[in-house]
Length: 429
Image (cartoon, rainbow, N blue to C red):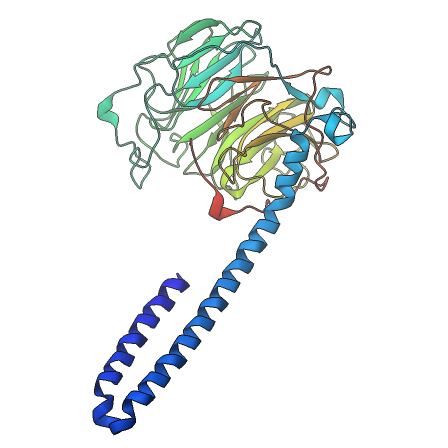
């Protein structure tokens, strides 16, 4: 805190000068008062000059910060203006298949839910929502070693898993009471099984379709670890069509574990991650993409699903590793459809979160998207819907619907993200 140190030095100097003035008649005789007044005047001039200089330096710093973020803000403003004002087509140069557009006529219903931490799609294309009821992740939830502090409160009493009708928005199903303490990740596989990770329990659960009893439980309840039989705050699951699945582990261990369909550990990949927050599997490309949240990047590795000579091994880089962009904030969630990769980025300023679509072959940014009537508030999960602390907002790939125009950013999306640490905020973990 340089300004605090300057203030302290100024006060100390003033005290020394005051003592000098009190003793000056003894030391300097009849001219002491004249000398003292002159020194006081000189001190005031120097202090005024220093203050102006400090203010100028601070103003220059603030100007540089504003200039750094201004292009991004202007681009977002331009993308949110009607095409009639900008003189361009809303769908210009954006391939129809890459335009996730908000379904504005999707019913808005009141749901009694807490923090929404996961969104998936069931085998009938209905959105499934995972929430925490009345439990919130805050500074007192865990101790310094990652152990949950509120075990005595018991599991969440609410039904934590809610299924909605994709067409009408009506409530189809709800279950999951007294099962979880701090649920985090949600996945529904091709067979309709529901997968949930719980960061308080340090466990991963698989529930067969129609059952509230897990057929597979990995990890030991409330016991964290970094060995082959434990997790430490696992965050997400990605499941292949063959049943092989991957677990991001997560907040503490910074690794991805690969299991067979029966839950036997096949391999472990530990990378230079800083909170592996979300996973998505692009099976046709044998690519597993990771939201490396606090490193502000997306990393894609080979999933190792294809066997035989010359096939890439699990964990080997898929193309250049990392995602490059400007002022996009932390990457909270990734999802894939076809050959497109979708991501939700956290906000450097509250209410400025947004989503983007990338083409994995050309490594280019195809589009940016956000709700028409409200801003994402710390969006942190994604599938066909984007979960926030507010009710679900539905997005679909709709060739006839309007969307924000593509970004003019550097088309090379790989590398490390530049981020503004001072303005990063976490609303929901």
